[in-house]
Amino acid sequence: MVKGSNVDGLYNKDPLEHDEEVKYDVVSFDEVVQKRLGVMGQAAIAMCRDDNVPVKVFDMNKDGDLMRLLMGDNIGTTVMQLD
Image 1: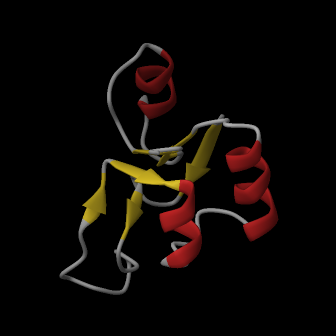
Image 2: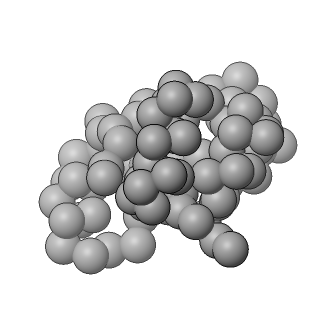
């Protein structure tokens, strides 16, 4: 599943409000819930986790990023089961 966002992935802090944020390249569903990373609603994350559906978070406002993602470029953050 792809999830368009206003930033280019998931961070430990809101990159629009902080200067010392750290971007995640890959993060687990459980970590998204525990750290309240706010990619989407808790119920949606739980459904993706339960059905083992990875989510790719990317910047929907950056020209060409959706096409790059679909072509296989490693952009954004992947939320997936890491067990």
